[in-house]
Length: 196
Image (cartoon, rainbow, N blue to C red):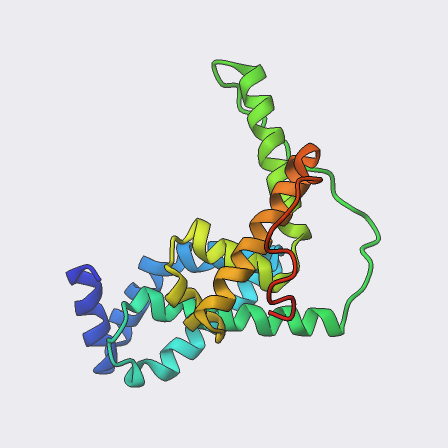
């Protein structure tokens, strides 16, 4: 943890509200991005981040410093996102109007390359959104936030081997979605740990 973040944590644990506000400012973008990737909904992500910081504020005195503050905060955010997804599943509804894909209208040096990059990004986003939440969470934590398998297991409350299996399954599903011509290739681990 950077020294300034560690100092802010120490001050906030001592009751300094300004220090906690500075912690929020320093970590908000990453927390929001994680929440958005896990929920796939801007409004849900804002709710998740708000709840995460509220929980962090209430539990800060119990933060022992065994892990980095950001790792601790990501775990809280991942848990809040899982709770939000559970609530959303109980109150699922169909949208009346589906918004089209957002277009990036900035003109780069190579518009054709920009178009291809945007298309790939859209396909990847759609494939990620199509994953079940428990698989999506593992991919986001590993491939976006670069957390090791042990940290992912701790964040999600599963075993390290379950985290590895879920990551393998998630990547396979993404590959099948993005590159359907290779989907027929035989998998040697197809029958392993299906209940994970």
